[in-house]
Length: 468
Image (cartoon, rainbow, N blue to C red; front, side, top):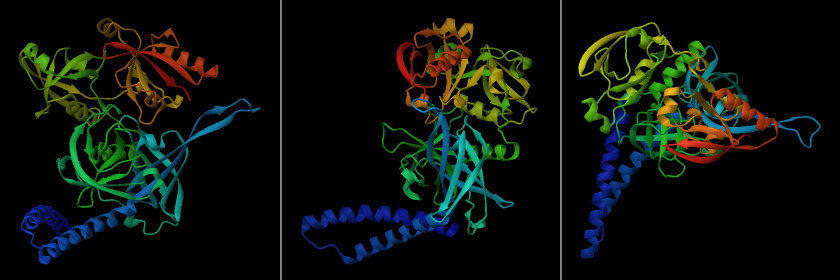
C-alpha cells in the first residue's frame, strides 16, 4: 500500500505537470503550424492511465465498507378524516461506513441526523443483501451515531472493515475521495481536495469540520471521506445549499472517539468545567492586552471551575502546559478529559499569570444545566433559559437556541444557533417550559405552524416554525 500511495502521488504530480506542458506545447505548435508529436501524447496518456488505475484500486478497496441506510421516523399522526389516528412516517436516506467487526456484528458509523428516533433502520450492503439494524447510540452534539448489524448472509465480513486514518495529520490541498449514496445512487464516488480545516458552520455544538470541494449531496450523510492511502479521514455530514463545492465532514478522530464512547458506554461521557467561554476578538485586545486565549464569561454555581477559584474575566492560555488559543481548542480538550482527572490551567488575571488546578467533572445531563432538547418533539431544537444578566445585557427576554439539529423542522424554518425566541403565536416566552407549553397548545389545536418573534444579532424578525 505504501508503494501504491507513493506511486499515486508521483503519478498525479507528473500528470498535472504534463497536462500543463502539453497544453503550452500545443499553443506553440499551433502558432508555427507543426503537428504535435505522438510520443508526447502517448506519454501523457500513459501517466494519466496509471493515475486512473491507482484511483480505482483505492475505490475498490474502500467500497465494501460503505453501506446505504434507510431509516423511518414517526413524526405525528393524521386524525381527520380518519376515525382513529394514523401514524405519519418520515423516511431518511443516508450512508454509513463499517468501522469494526466482532462477535458476529458489524459496527457502522453514520450521522445522528440519519438515524435518530428511527422506528426501524435497514442497511443495504449491496444490491442482494439488506438487513435490519439497531441503534447502539447517537450523539446530536457532534452528529455522530453508531448502529449494529449481524453478519448473517453477508459475504466476506472481515474484508468489509474500513481502515481509519489520522485526521490530525490532514493538510489543506490534499486529495480526497467521497463515497456515498446521494439520492439513493449507491456507492457514488467524487474526487476533490481538502479546501479548509477547523470549520464551524453552526449545526452542532462541537464543530471542527473538514471542508472539501468533493461533491457531497443528500444521501451522502454518514459516508466516508477517504485519503489517497484508502484511509477514512472524515464522515461526510453537511453541505451549504446556497453554494457549490462546499461540503463538510466530521474529522475521523473526533467521530471515532464518540463511537468508542457509544459502543463501550452506550452514551458519550464528557468532561465538564462549568464555564461559558468566548474567543478574544481584535476589539478586546486593547482592553485585555492579550491576543490569544479563551475568555471566561460565566461560571456555573457549584461547578469545578468555581471550586478551583476561576473567576469571570480570567483568560485561559494553556492546559497542562499545552497552549490554548481559541474556544474550540479548550472545548475539545475538556470534552475528552476523563471525569475525575485533575488539570492545570494557566490563566491570565489582571495581567498576572497564575496556575490553577481543577478536577474535571462529568458533564451533567442537559436538563440539569438548563437545556431542554426538543428533538423528541420533532422540532430539532436545544434551548435554555436566559439568565437575568443576559436579559439585561441583550435587552431581550426569551429562550436561547443552543443548537439546531441538521435536517430538522427548526432548520427548515430558518432558525439558527444563537437566536432568541421572544414570542410564540404572539405570546411572550420567558422560559423553556413556557415555550413547550405554547407549542403543545398549538399542536393540540391542529396548527401546522407557529409564528415566532426572534431576536437575531440585535434585531427582531418574524419566522414561521413548522410544527409537523
